[in-house]
Image (tube, rainbow, N blue to C red; front, side, top):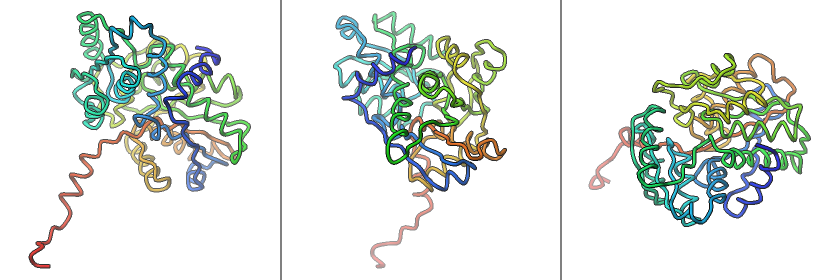
Length: 337
């Protein structure tokens, strides 16, 4: 995918997406040992995640005949919502295959808010792909893959394009970043970010960030071959449980400088920092790159460096949190007041 494709995607989807603002926080600078940390909060994007960018760009590339047939995809939630939104806005029927472990908030949004047909499957990548392929063949739908699609990658890259353009303007006046941290699951956002950064800020180091419990990108990078994640993973970062695809592996090999792993405790700590210090509601997958920044910061590697972090989404399943809060509150009898 080229930078010209990213620029064209940005113009194409502009009427439908939010140009999310850049966020800075002095506390993050201190905690990361950096000169500056700049956040690109895609949790403030349509559907609460960067995925709206790629899904819209992909659907807008379809012919009228393909749009009439409808589209299908498999997703744990954010691509599901994004594709459903694209279908709703552009009048295209959408079917989504979602694993049983997908957060309830994402299932409800996909089905109830955006009107897609939702089918459930087991939690392995094989189950997702098998169920999707069978349904696609049965109904002659067009597959819009969550990340193994050049139009999805180009759309995802528009977040980094905005990041760079806005960082260079007032009030940030950052001509270049030293490091750009981005989460990696299937690799669409990583690929779009990495190719855009390499084209526009060639000296910046792109760091892909991944949970230890879903480390296929880390394994693939070290082996030099695509290593799929074939077993169910228990990471709380549900959006990063998928594996790289050929197109995203190729982008990682060409444009990514390193892959950094974080533990579940590290990503939860970063998620809490975002809640407390920036007041941003960011899901576990979105907090992974900030966790990686903090991890590198502790080694002194980021001293005096200007760092960018792309927060991929904010679709947090609040049912468990609020169930806990409700169980702990006191409920005095109104008759005694």
